[in-house]
Length: 212
Image (cartoon, rainbow, N blue to C red):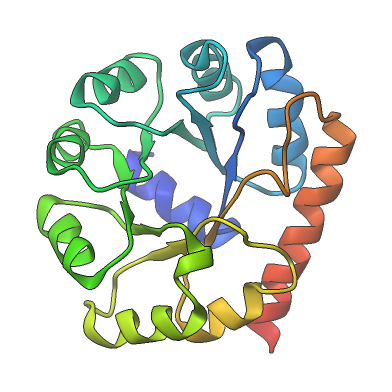
């Protein structure tokens, strides 16, 4: 299965990106197992976590059906580091054309952060796989709806920041295709059981938006 196929499979299974900021390598497999048992297949370890490349390597090797990669990727060299560690997902809080192009060159899934229509169109032109709408606290469902009206119909939109089970439906109705979930899912030191419980709660909330 190539990276594009793995991304499509992960989106179909559960289009929620687990943002594991602060994850330690020695807890990576237990947390990854909790996510896998809850049906999550999109996993991001931000590069400002402790030894993130070790965690990415361990997760990618142990969970081959998941699309594992890094967040807070700010430089093209970091894209190459993530790729070398086995990661195939690049997420950033911002849009940097060189980062997106390097990820595209390496056939990685890239979700740059954007806030405006100008940034969104520029990111897509550079080769972005989808768009991280960040911070979502500043991008209301009404703003998502406005962006959806002008962006290409197949653009994938992922609001990130302040997403909880209570506001997912409004964003979904506005045109969101998935979400990035951070501290509401995982905090450093969280038990695998707690992560699984939170993951199942978010999965149930997502499925509820599809039935609404």
